[in-house]
Structures are given as C-alpha cells and as structure tokens.
Image (cartoon, rainbow, N blue to C red; front, side, top):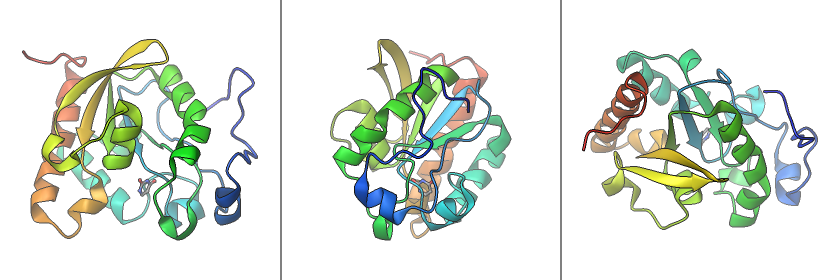
Length: 191
Ligand code: URA
C-alpha cells in the first residue's frame, strides 16, 4: 500500500526487540478498497520469511474458511496489529502495539472496510479497547470509534486456535461466513 501523510513503515525502528527479531516488515496485503479487513496479531516465522501476513498454518485455515464462505484471499485485506515478528512468536507487548498503531489506523482509514474482523484476543482487545472473552464473544459485532470514524468490528477466534480444537474450528468457520454475509449486504446487521 502506498504510504501517505509522510508516515512510512519502511525501516521503522520504534521497537528495539522487534527490530532485532524480524527479518523484514510485514505490511498488509489485499485490495486497498476491500470490504473486509482481517486483523491478526503479528507475523510469525513464515510471514517473516515471506513478507506476507497469514501464510503459515494459520493462513491455510483462514484461506480454507474464506473459500468455504465463497471468498478468496484476493478478495479481502489481511493485516496485523504489529508488523514485525516478535521474538519466539511471543504476543506483542502493549508498547509494541501502540508503536505500530499509526500504521494500522492509516490502513483502516485508507481501506475504509465495511467490516473489520479481529482474529484472536490480542487484535480484538487492541481495537475494542477492552478485555475480551474471545471464544464466547466470537460472532459479536461492535461499533467502535477509530480515529473519529465509527467502524464495525466482528470478533473472531484466531485461526491457530482451531488447529487442535474442533469446536473452535466450527466457531471460526461460522464467523468467517458471517463476515462474508455482512460484506455481501454492505455491513447491515439485522436487529
Ligand atoms: N498469526 C497472526 O496473528 N498473524 C499472522 O500474520 C500469522 C499468524
């Protein structure tokens, strides 16, 4: 994505630990006008190698669920709260998330998605600004103010959570189908 407003992620060195652990900065991918924006936690090993979010095992789970919902990776935008791989794939700290937040806010502003889908607890709490019980709240939709604009956020479990737990897989697939349906009808929620 082009970087506007003089805010360039290229060569970013805001987070000392992450500068040391990353091989590259992993930006969001997908159409700059996508209706669905998926937000994960941070790049893992594969993402760090290939420079693209969700290309490892979690990415396969996401791709499969998108396909089952009638979508493909090329239809949606995929990004992370933090654009550099944390050491040992630990969760990004709140400082790291704050340091990276301007890049995420700008991406949200530029893509202007109908629905933001948070993949897992970390991105859910980061964008909603509250504690989240992600498994029981998956499928809930919340409107949240992001940089002065109301954004529709759909809470989803992380695809990695589905790898060893069949019930999480069902929850994940149901939520991705819900995202596809919301995108199809412009984000309207039946009350
Ligand atoms: N997990 C994430 O949260 N993001 C990725 O890009 C890969 C795995």
